[in-house]
Length: 521
Ligand code: NDP
Image (cartoon, rainbow, N blue to C red; front, side):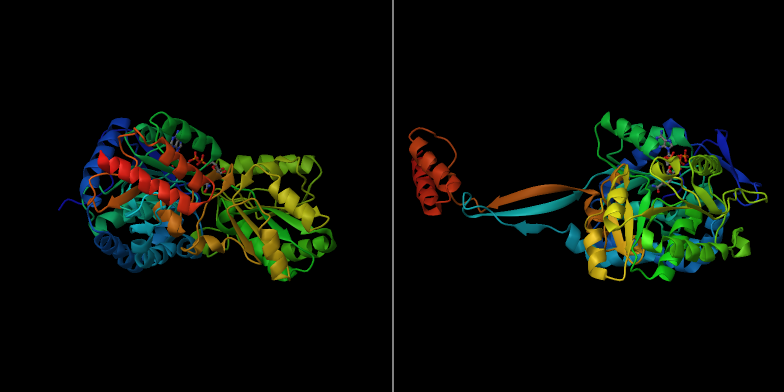
């Protein structure tokens, strides 16, 4: 049996170079998959779809379940390679990239049959003797376009969800993290899926654009708003469905009754983990006036303890994965300071080779600043003083993004009430980010953070279409509503008024009359 691999690209074709975010040293060259090669990969995925969709769910789950063994056996080696690719600490590669995959596979092994299975639903009295069902069927060939910040997890979860639901997949990892693209291709080779079930295409934006223009049936995109718009425009040409997982500017609300030490540690981790390159990073800390100064002092204590370095140094924070991000971060911080904000800590590049920026706290941030309005995607924690919880909620919601939010308070009921007022896809009370790791919970945004959900039941359903089924035993030669219409008007009016007016017996009498007239032919 031929198995899936990274798609074959011309040996003499164009390539791109990958450099280490830690040292700047070259790490290798990778092929740029051409539009023609993209079409060939999509054609292979299309061919494989015919068989994969017919493969029983149990069997699909069994085959994909082998990934658990591969991740268990090679996880630490993969963590090192992901860290080499991204610069993130090894702890993060294990925790936030690799560990979620077995957890998701376990969850879907237990739930997929129920979620994807045929469901019986009610049938109105208007259709006596019939039964109604909803079925799910796979969409077809799914294009997954993945970003560089969590290049393993943000590729694997949509790919696996689509596969479990019976689709085949063409994945385009980011050119910023091609080593991780290689790991993913290697995993699918190791588990020996039939040829074409998963195609991994290395390349740059041109490869991504070619994939959105190819004959795929749905696009699942994670990345920036700007590219998300292009993806949606490409999808509109066919037209095919898209899901967009875009950026965020997550608000963390700290109320006066919160456990401030916990809140400070949470802000430090939520704002700086993965060097702040996370769509669910804490990018705005809204702190009630009464505890603002105390909270800021505690936050500063926490951030002061952070060590910055490459994966081999076992630091808390690595370099930026994507070097161009440094310019965005510098512009945001500089603009904020010019508009009156204060750098409490950090606020500059780290003096060493590589793409390092110091863990940074900026206080006195206000809504006019770019640092407040735009996604920074770097290790910067902006702190905003607010009068009370109502102002915190107003500011949290008055934003272009709506991905995650969090509320820190000593009163859980109050925290829940505030959570329900936040315009975003996920909220945690007295914690942050972790909900994304619960495979039972859906994940996705509102506003410019995108639309659609994955993870949870929705993560499988979104890779299916619904099919409505109605069944009749077929014993009668006729249906009350069929032709002829001659002599039926009064009975039809009786059904109409009975149903619309809520008089069921009247409707049933009308229906019986209609049936008698139709049966006489
Ligand atoms: P992009 O949105 O440009 O990249 C995401 C993916 O889309 C990559 O695989 C990229 O390929 C691909 N791509 C690029 N151009 C096209 C195109 N025309 N059609 C289809 N696919 C395309 O993100 P960036 O890398 O530019 O990151 C910039 C910003 O995006 C960050 O500063 C951050 O704000 C946000 N972001 C948000 C993420 C999230 O998790 N929500 C993740 C990453 C970034 P390639 O990389 O090879 O060019």
